[in-house]
Image (cartoon, rainbow, N blue to C red; front, side, top):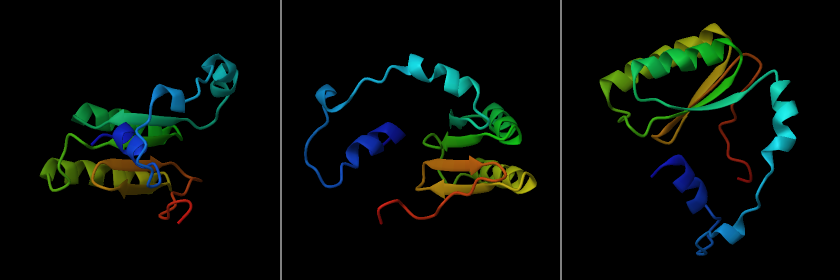
Length: 122
């Protein structure tokens, strides 16, 4: 199950299947000037090769936050252990934070950003 599937399925116990009527269209043109002036950006990345690790590391060194999708890897996978260790080292080097959410996501934050281990509302 992918990231968006999980978001859509966590309806707080509702049995209602989401439809397009359940969503509000957001005009992203209104946000363009705000985004351009942002000091910190949040990136979503697929972690499927060693090249992806380099891009993620660069983003963290630049002070950005990365949510990495691990669905293509098993958490028991030796390569995944190496990648996770490498990203932990980067978070440590910049004084940031890293956490694994379930088996399919890593969230890596730069210095000055802490990642709560508690879900909101619980």
